[in-house]
Image (cartoon, rainbow, N blue to C red; front, side, top):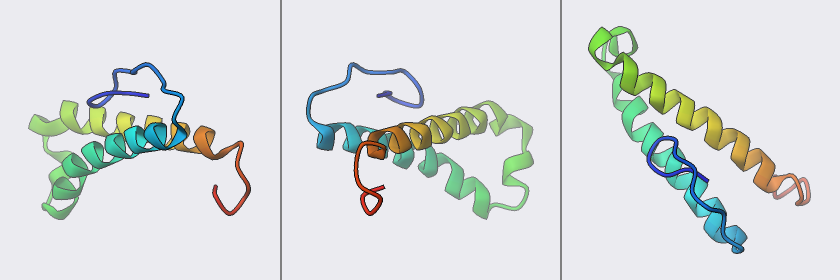
Length: 78
């Protein structure tokens, strides 16, 4: 699991806690990305580029972690 934007934290034995931590990363990334998506030229503004890249990387990593988290479950859970 990762903390703010990308630092991994030690996994816990509670799968619900793991899913909550992953979803918190999704929320953190989306709280950066959504306002920029609504702004004209938001993704192309140079002053935000580093923060946006970090948010996209966090979102990408969280998606992989969610896929891995659900891999051992049935298709409906996934």
